[in-house]
Image (tube, rainbow, N blue to C red; front, side, top):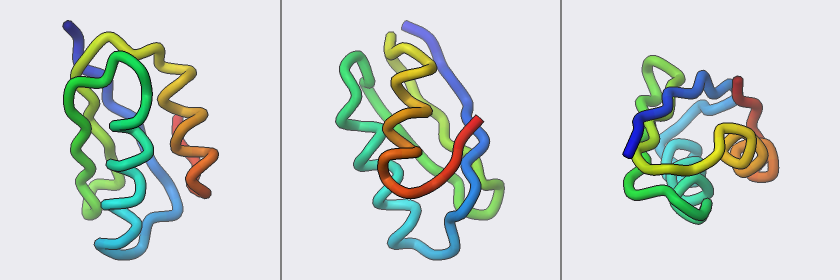
Length: 65
């Protein structure tokens, strides 16, 4: 199991944070996803593909790298 940190842009409130966490949690291989709104970062634990995580965030309406 590994940990992946993504920089997420476009989040402005707690609803955004929860929306991104839900999107990331839906990706195959994700064990846990937590988002830090102040840092603009998402930390994902599991074996998910980085590109799939970025796509999930993008599909949710935000940008990630």
